[in-house]
Image 1 (tube, rainbow, N blue to C red):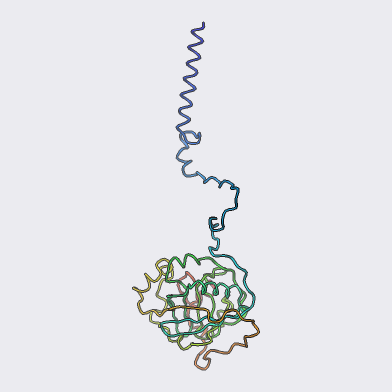
Image 2 (cartoon, rainbow, N blue to C red; image 1 turned 180 degrees about the vertical axis):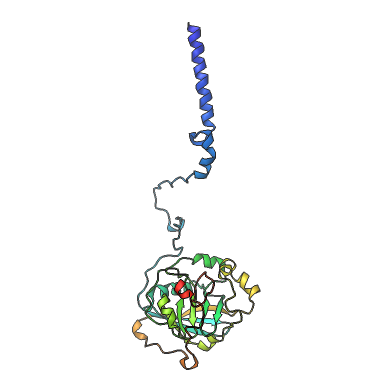
Length: 290
């Protein structure tokens, strides 16, 4: 009897041992048939709590979070930026009261030298000149963070500057300067934040040879590596620098027309496309589509 019980006990131990070995072969104790599925569904373990607070620079960025330090948007103030370009210099005056969010994004971009070596990639005579995709793809990636819209408080007159968009809430870095009065853009949400106060004839002289041919997606991915060999005659910004930092808004007088006598108003039925980011240029009907 004892030998029989001993034999039975040994048999049970061997059985349990064999089952235990099979379980070890499946990661995480999963049945063998679910092993491959577990590989694709595996989640990253949560970080362990540390005794000390990690440095800000060591923290991972949340999806879509601005990689730059967040700062309050000043509601007032006037500053000026001088652009040196292949067609000569021009000066932009920015009034934060016109469009505070857009004005501050532009201020941050200039401080980061974003517009240095930046091409005028869309030039439509009698309508707008558009720029603001950096020559460096890494700069484009850095600033590819949308900002909220500003209400339209000023009209898109000749020499006034607004952000291009791909629809509501999509402003990043692209700008356009109005060659003529374009009041039709006001109702589409294009909020001017500044105006050209010096050198508008140099803006007028920017080369329109390529029109709207450069592909915006290609510029974002390859930068000047795409533009220079493909469109060698594009005019460009050498550098853009602050020449007057924020001053009280009281110092600003009612803006005057920039070379108004030399300008003609844009024909609202001209068929020119709306200044847009990451979208191919369309006809006038694209205003309603945006």
